[in-house]
Image 1 (cartoon, rainbow, N blue to C red):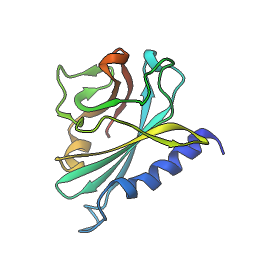
Image 2: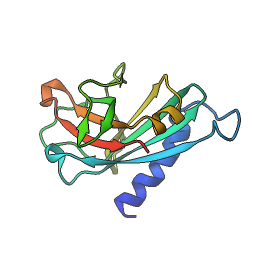
Image 3: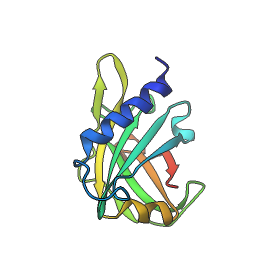
Image 4: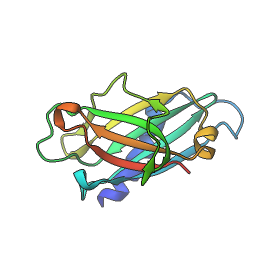
Length: 152
C-alpha cells in the first residue's frame, strides 16, 4: 500500500481513537484533514493532521511519516496552532499543545509516529480564523519547524 494511502487511512482511524465519542448535532460532528508540508529541515517527509469537532473543543490526531536523521529517540514533537499561513506565521502561537510531547511509534513494520491532542477551541473557529498547525522537534534536536499545514 502506498505510504500516502496508508497515512490517510491511519489518520481516519486515529481520529476516532484519540478523540471523544461523537455526540451532538451534525454540525458538531465535523472532521477535517490537514496535509502537513515538510519544511527544509525535514525535506522528503510526509505528515497529516485530522481534526475532529468535539463541541467547544477540537481533537487533533497527528500522523508523522518521518523526522530528520539523527533525531533523538524516543521522539519528542511539539505542536502549535499559529495565527496566519505557513509562509507567514504570527509572532506567537495562539495555542500550544505540549503537555505530552512523546510521540508514539506506529508499529514495528510501519515507519512513523502519532500524537493525539486536544485544544479548547471549537473546530469551526479554527476553520474560520486563518490558523496553521506547526510541528517542531525538541530543543535538544534543534527546535526546528518540521511540518506546517493551514487549517481551512
